[in-house]
Image (cartoon, rainbow, N blue to C red; front, top):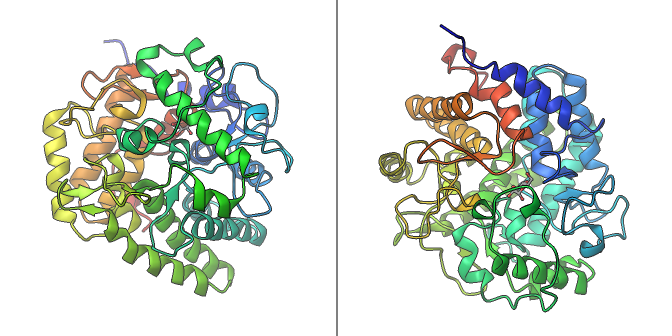
Length: 423
Ligand code: GLC
């Protein structure tokens, strides 16, 4: 009998091929720069065979931190014509290196804690940089102190064209400069990417940010898209807990971190929609919840929130009956579900990793293992692409993808063994 493909060797060589020395691109061509949360997940992969390289990845990202504390979602360390919109569109050049003007889900403290557990504590300076980034999220994206974190652009959520954003996004006037050339369609089939009508609004939101000089207060007051996201909020809440652990290990005063944890822990309940029976995003301009749940709804346990846990598990069970592989990015029973269109259906393995981690901590090892096994089955059958079709298991989006490779190495390839749990 022929043995199956050696995904571990393949995953390592994808990380090496996507390595640009001090950072790892998500995939050549489609995403040729440093992306924020991609790099942090990449570090988890590097940590499996080159710990020094894992730390470098994170240090490089934080070299691009803005004076405000914001850590941008893209850092343009080099020039590349294969991507649009580049630095000339973002015009966020008052700091060097050029970068985008928005952020991405803050997984840094959680990844750094993981590295600390398997290697060593980070330098105090890295802890302080992450602390400043967390403070930025609260100040800039929750200026009223409601305990829910807003995103000012769908890309800031890391889940670009989720159906959740449709209603809020379609209130944004499209850019009048509609003649731009998209480059993503040079690399990936149009059926797997957002529509032009979405892109016209993504660009209008960038132009809005530019018009304010990327001023946090002006963005919070006037940005036409201002939606509280359970995904970013759950990731931040988890990260704050991990930051507290790091701070205590380093002998820092974590009083502020604890106060921030309390605020979002309480605030998170605002995402609960009785109508949808799950956690949903919340448009802070209109007060409306999105209609249906997304994969981020299942991140509540990852954030340490066990309220409504039984309802969430019932919901996960219902999703599992509606698709072949968990966890699709959007409710597979909903009319807006599209199994291969980017964040409107596909399974993303780093989201599965986070959900599975939370389910294990909730005391649901069978569900945690189901998600790991589904992810392993997808990668074994379909290779290491950007994401996967939850109905057929086929590959979706870009190929040779860094975070899929990294999560294979760090998680999906390792069947759960409760004796290996470190916490
Ligand atoms: C897309 C994804 C985002 C990711 C980026 C690079 O924009 O939605 O989450 O960080 O690609 O992979």
